Length: 358
Length: 265
Ligand SMILES: Nc1ncnc2c1ncn2[C@@H]1O[C@H](COP(=O)(O)OP(=O)(O)OP(=O)(O)O)[C@@H](O)[C@H]1O
Ligand SMILES: [Mg+2]
Image 1 (cartoon, each protein chain N blue to C red):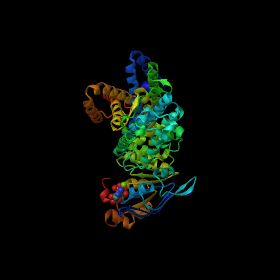
Image 2: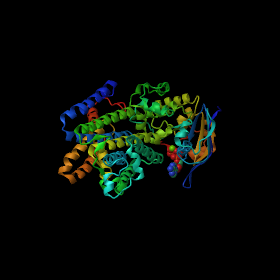
Image 3: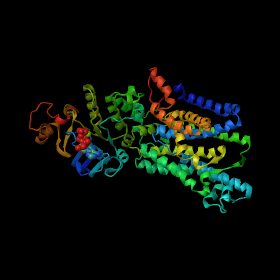
Image 4: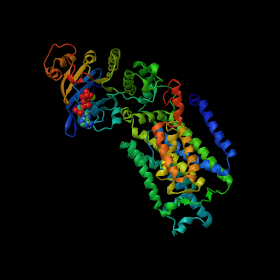
C-alpha cells in the first residue's frame, strides 16, 4: 500500500480521501461543538507536521515549538482585539483588557496591527525570520542533540514568562473574548464552521508542502544531514543552512497554526505556549511516528483527543500519563505507530526498501 | 594546470602542546597514487584532518584550481575546502545508511545545485552518477540502501561520492581496511583509474597493497616526514627500516615493512 501511495496517482488518492473526510464526513457527522474541538486539534496537527519535518527528517529535537505557535497566535490576537475595540469605540481605541488595567494609550507596537494585511504578513514573516536567525546562530555553532533540545525548551519557558510580565499583552490571562475575525461574527455557527474549513484546508496545504520537501532532493539531503552531518560538510554543503530551512518551515507551520487557533478557541495565554504545551506538540509526533508524513498528524489528533477526554476527569493523572507515554514510546517504539506497519513488513520478510524511497 | 594539485608547506598541528603533525611538507601530483604510511599515531589522519579543515594548523596548504589558480586553503571552512575540489573518506566508512546508493551519489554530485533545483524532485540520475556507479561496480545496487551494503562496497561508494563531486584531490584514509584479497585488487585498479587526471593520496598500513599500487610513498613518523620517494627508495631508506623494524635490513622479504604495532590494522 505504501508503494501505491508514493506514486502520483496514489498521492492524489490519499489527498482526495483526506479531503473527503475533512470537508465531507466530519461536518456532516459532528455537532458544532465537536467540530470546533476537531478544528482545535487540527491546529495541533499542523504544528505536528512541521515537527515531523524538523525532528523526524532533520533530527532537530524541537522541544520549543510553543514559541512560534505563540507568536502566530498573539499576533493574530492583537489584531482581533484592536478590531473589536474599533467596532465598539471607533478607530484607535484601546482594547477592553487595557482599559481594565488602566492603560489609556495604545502602545506604539500595537498600532500597525489594526491593519489585517499587516497582521497576516507579520504572522507569515516574523516567526519564520526569528527561526532563521536563531537557527543560523545555533546550527552554525554546531549546537545539536540534547543541547539544542534544552535550548529550545528554555526558550519556550522564557517566552511564556516574558508574556506573563507584559500587562499590555494581557499578562497571565492572555488575550481572550474576541467577537470578530476579519469582520465575521464568531458567535455565528456558520462562521465557526468556516474556521474549521480554514484549519482543514491549511492542514492539507501544510501536508502537501511537507510531502514535496520530503520527495525533493532537499528532502534526501536533509536525511543525510540528520544521519551524518559531518560527512555532508565534506561533500561541500553548508549543513547549517540545510537545517535552517527545515527549522524555519516548522516555525512557519506552527505560527500559522497559532494564528488560526485564536479565533477557533477564543483565547491565547502563556499557558497555551510554554513548556508543557511544547512537550505535548512533540508527544503527538513521537507517538504517531516522527519520520513518517501522516504519523505526526494522527499522533497529534490522538493526543489532543485523549487530553480532552481524560484531563476533565483526571486532570493531574493526565500530566503523568503524558510523561509515561512519552517514555514508553521513545523506549519501545522509537518509530511511533507508523513504524508498526514497517515492522510487520520486515516480519513477513518482504524486501527492505530505503526509508526515503518507500 | 600545473602538475602539483596540492602543496602543503610546514604544517603543524598542536593539540594542547602535543604536536601531532610537526612541520610536514607534502606535494600531491596529478596522475599519482601517493601512499602515506607510518606507524599508529604517526599523524596521518591528523594531517588529512588539517588539509580538509577539521583540525587547526599553522603553515600553508595551496590548492591548484582550474578557475582561480592557486588558492590558500588554511582558515577556510570545511565545506568551502570541499568545493575547491578536496575530497576525503574516513577511517570508518561513512555513507548515508538510510539512503540508496543512487541517492548517496546524487547528493554528493549536487553541492553546486541552486535552491530551486534542490526543492524539486529528481527526475532522473545525472550522467556523472550513472557513470561513476558503473565505475565503482555498484550499478546493480542503485536502489539498495547504503546501510546494507557489504563493507567493501561501502568504501567504493565513498570513493564514488568523491568522484561525482568533481574532487580532483582525493584523500583516502585506509580505504581497503577489512577488504578481502579480490576486493583489494579491484580497489587498487580503481585508484589507478581515477588517478589519471586526479591526485590520489592513500593512508594505509598494508605494505603488500602499497607495493602493488603506489606511484610514490611518503613515510610519516611522530608527526614528521621521514622519507619520500618511490617504493624502492623508501624501502631502502635506513631511517624507515629503523622505525619499522628496529634494524637496517636492505634485502628483506615482502612482509618486512609491516610496522610491529600495526600488524592487525
Ligand atoms: N583531537 C585530538 N586531541 C589530542 N590528540 C590527538 C587528537 N587526535 C589525534 N591525537 C593524537 O595525535 C597523534 C596522531 O594521531 P593520528 O590519528 O593522526 O594518527 P594516525 O597516523 O592516523 O594513526 P593510525 O594509523 O592509528 O590511524 C596520536 O598520538 C593521537 O593520539
Ligand atoms: Mg589514522
